[in-house]
Image (tube, rainbow, N blue to C red; front, side):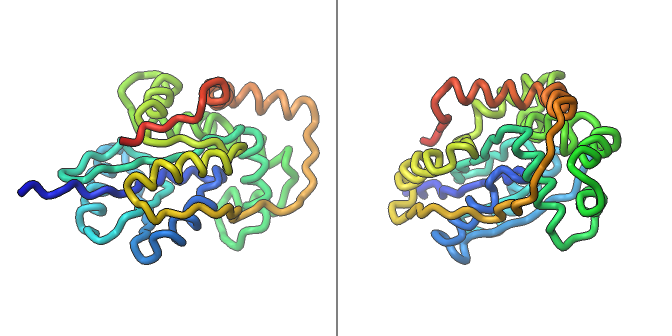
Length: 241
């Protein structure tokens, strides 16, 4: 008798892309079968994929695996992996990150920076320190490019990743995205229930956006804006089997 494939959910939790809201919904549905873990940065991201496969296989009773880490899509024997991520307008995401880091009770460079400077300075310092693929420059493109790192161009890799991830939602259409995702997840988990919840909502901190800063952010996030344009022009993506 052939053993049926186990189905699990893998959430690529991109910082300030409604990941906490999605995690809360998944936690409410799956309770103790929800796990989260971060993986150390490594030059060989395929090593992380192997660790993720081991993580899934070593927790046979768990269903949801959520992580901020990026790595190539895992393939595990006898496991059907439903991968999920959300896209967001990059400038809105950076503003949200600044507001969040300004109020969060942690000690690191960007959080300390947010607490001590205005948004303009925050952006300019992080651009200088982190460069392309950092918090303020095509962040989503470079996170996605690590999922399918087969070309030399980050945008090409990111587009390829989006075509392979099981479900890609839009933060600006979170409710619509979740209703679509819920319908698909019910094919595997009939008792899945979606109730709108918005976690980690950014503080109401007024942001001044001078024209030169807005243009700088547009120039530094062309890839992220291109990805978003593609998804706005197409329907929400889902490749669930």
